[in-house]
Image 1 (tube, rainbow, N blue to C red):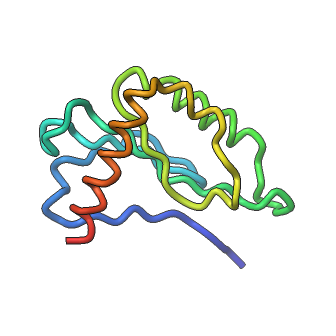
Image 2 (cartoon, rainbow, N blue to C red):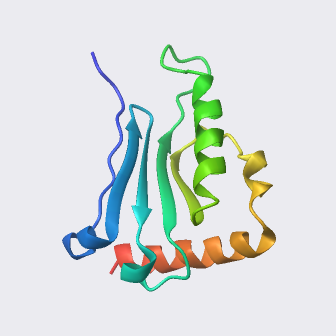
Length: 117
């Protein structure tokens, strides 16, 4: 029996602005092109699933991998994490500057408007 999985849905007209960078059974990283979306910088979106701590699918290396990816991609643009964190808080997200955190909120708001048109 298999459970879980990830899916990243988007409207067809957005296809040319999205490129997939890296995937794993528990996450997908994609880049949202700043030119296509008329943004200041590219947005690196991670669709992430963190299994419950008591699950046989839980892997503590997932935190290390995610942190490493955030450290890499935040130098190139904005970071957005979305998915099922199973009630965990990402305390270390403050590696981003306060300006980038505010802009990240604006980007999330902008993308929500695009997706739910």
